[in-house]
Amino acid sequence: QVQLVESGGGLVQAGGSLRLSCTASGRISRINYMGWYRQAPGKQRDMVAVMISGGSTNYADSVKGRFTISRDNAKNTVYLQMNTLKPEDTGVYYCSAEVFYGYGLGSFWGQGTQVTVSS
Image 1: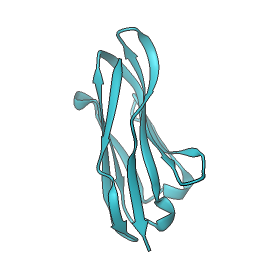
Image 2: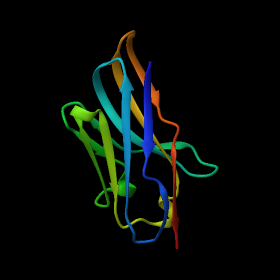
Image 3: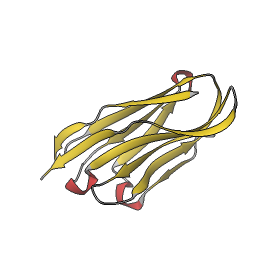
């Protein structure tokens, strides 16, 4: 199996910054993509930013110019640098990855990390 562990969430004032990290571990052969999703209270889980193995990225319109996704392939780790945070960025941030591992191809989720932006 593959495990994803997130860190870096917390409470920050509007205009501040946070950096999230997510590390994948297990019998990993190759990671197709890693990304971040956000779920606000009472709402569905939405894509925030993803990065595929070739380095291409995709961002939600609401975070373009403020958030940056990056990846350290050697560490199987993806980061999300969040700048100029807004109260509407509040939610649980989940890491997701599509991974070739010991038993084939699978999609995995982390446990989530809370981000709260106060106004």
